[in-house]
Image (cartoon, rainbow, N blue to C red; front, side, top):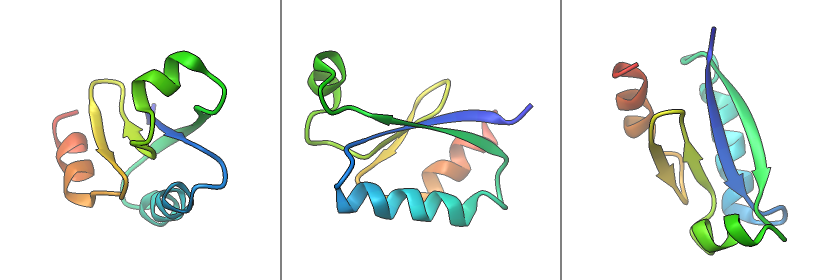
Length: 80
């Protein structure tokens, strides 16, 4: 079963759009399902992530934020 990743973002955020595109490009390298979670209007998520979006998380840890860090993603999948 593929790993589940979550991207916490705000719609209309150019960094968020960029990370989504970058994740689509690497889906052939690593097998994962992506849950897209908009933090807008959710007080708990806003408090947690605030202006630090987009944030990419896996089931075990936060992987990266602002930009897709392919080395961090590789490290995450290497420790699966």
